[in-house]
Image (cartoon, rainbow over the protein chains, first blue to last red):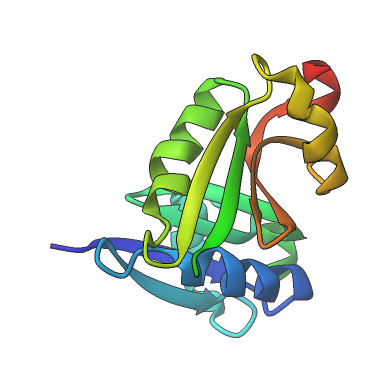
Length: 78
Length: 78
């Protein structure tokens, strides 16, 4: 079974670059990657925060948050 | 031809977690991943800085640095 990786972003340039390079480079045999735009899908901010996401872009893999560079603090997306 | 991804770290817990989750999850069909421990291989700090690495753990993909969470500032590794 594939693991789930969720890429949270806000459409910012730093986010787009991280998605194109890091999120899209994950092994499709191991991970199913979902991309969530927290700027347009604010209903998922709570879920992201619960996973430990403090800023975007962030990749949550197996429940663990990995913040990639810094685009925007999550507070700015509420 | 595979692209090169270099994972710079310093053996810290944050680094180990990022390596196990993110670096090891990259698609082996697309990327050849090299892991460099800057704490023990200080000769490569200059190369990491030249690529834009400010802290570890960081993943340099196609010449672009992606800082993953925060383990240690690169200044501490010189």
